[in-house]
Length: 207
Image (tube, rainbow, N blue to C red):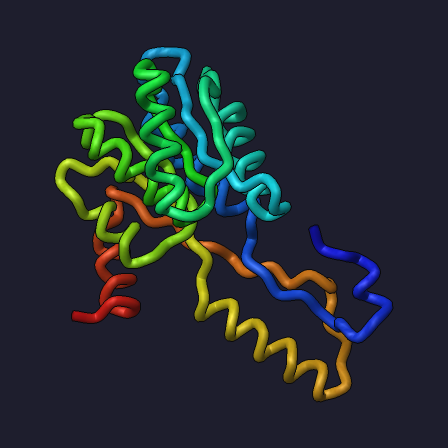
């Protein structure tokens, strides 16, 4: 969690991505995809709630489902951030709860682990994964046919860097930076917007 006492020290501003926005944008896509699914949707979750930013993503995702009228149950959950640990955790989850009908991951490692677990279970394209973060690996999953990862919302590194430069210039010019926390918009990627996925790959994983 952001230490507000930093305002009284040497920190003049804090630049970060809109963490709640990551959950909200993925949730908005999920609402449309799950609107006609049998209710309740039975979720398996890989979270990283020991970090405040992850908890914000999770709360926003499921709040968005609530606001969208989706009836769901979280039938299994675990905390894993690294893909090598997320894969077996997700495999165990799917084995213990074969009635899971959707999955949500709180970061790139969790999201990739969920996709790989669905694939290893022989249910590729049958159990949708809704994710967080964007990497070339996750972008590749979005392009798969059939796709298991349907959407993920990522932080915009270029925009974050640009905002940081703007803040530094303002401070060097003697001006204040308000608000103290400078939130940077995030970007949603999905199977319904593959041109944007391809553009991301061309910029971040050129062949």
